[in-house]
Image 1 (cartoon, helix red, strand yellow):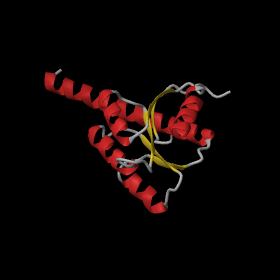
Image 2 (cartoon, rainbow, N blue to C red):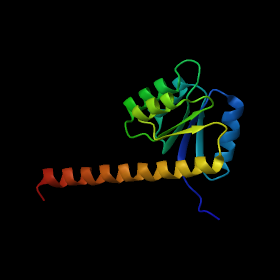
Image 3 (cartoon, rainbow, N blue to C red):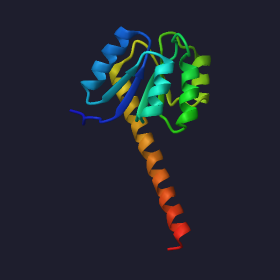
Length: 146
């Protein structure tokens, strides 16, 4: 049996049945899941909390997934984001990657594939945080003249 992955995930999708079902499936695998049913809601939640990963639907009313991605990356440049789409195109996935998405997954979601992507994203986030910590420590040591 694989080890339990502990990560804090924000799941964003306007399809409430899909959102509820996927959140339950992820929580059953040990993840702490917050949900948002719109891009606006997701951006507001990112203001209040940090997440190991954001899983973001591409096609939503209001601000769509690409615009939500831009706004989240403007606030948290090191946010790990996986895009989801039921009608994704190569052009759209390339655009999402250019804007900072880590990956792009087609619906219907294969839960094993998604869990692997979450694991990779969490590992990437840990590396970024470790690197920032080392830089902060070096900065403090350098300014103190130790």
